[in-house]
Image (cartoon, rainbow, N blue to C red):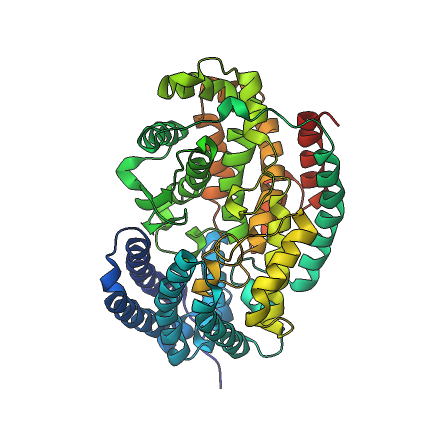
Length: 509
């Protein structure tokens, strides 16, 4: 009996039907994103239970659509036929299949409980952080650890649970590979940090004082707009923990926070989130709603925020751009110069207790500590009850400081309250990607540093848009995207050489 070969017309129809279903799921995820943003920025405290129910019901609907057997049948036919059109269509089918396999493996009951626990965990974390009492959050974290193990097991029982969780954020990455990368980073950074502490520290008193937060906010709004963030397609607000969210490239929501006695946190935080926001606003609307149009990985997303924050905003060139604007906003800085501003903005914090406030040199050690702890939580070698003690000891061993309380220690980050195990490593992976991408940008834009000094940011933004943002998930891994954009796969030594060169100059060692 002859097997009927599907016609090109049938293949085209299947692909169109697939795209229609994928776009519907994307729209529903956008609604979920808005609910999450509102929860962290504007929702009244008393609405927590209601919001949890809303998110749980919506998560159930999304799960049903994402696991619809008709979606699986379309993907199976398109893959079996091997006629998925051009490279873009092939990538759409590949990414959709990957998502479908993960989604169908997770039972609806687990998916619904995950959505409920997001709200319960966040609410518990906020209260525990305010009270600086880890025990108030520990029960929800216990639930998250077990739920995460169950979800990982349902997706792929043959792989280590942490590898399965990590793959959600950094495709193809494993504990084995991360251990190698972080060992190399740790071996290079620990002696560098020790060496820098023996050097001559930059004078940070030149930017010390009290700075009105309303004025800081206006300054940040002006700068992020000049960098290219479009307020017609986004918002900038204040939240407990800076983040970027929203529902669509035309509706990107980012937040930051300000301190009256710290001029740098609000500014660098806003520019950091602008990097995320530019990635989102720069996505290809011709592929709207399709998985290929999403960011390749969280590490690649983080590369864009860190590129703008560290490669651009913390550069000598940006200090020349920033100086007159800073002095206009705060006349008390009239004696400041670009030559004194740059070292002050880049000085190593002593002690570096808070991850989001840490300098470039010490930041990776914050990530390595979190990676080791969360890996231990998932594989059972670390108990939730022991986290505060292990956290404090790790901080002492890595950075020579121990948090005075839980709020400044184990409770400082929001991530575990949402069950985001495997997320933390992407921050330092992103920093490494950023170094390689920026080096490639400098080669492509010979006068890049002069552009930054002049406040001419479109050339860099356009290059990133074409090389990274609009490429989306065309490539199946960050290494392959890096190879296409920079000519190299990930090389940690590029990151270490960058830090060594920059901070050796700053500290005259």
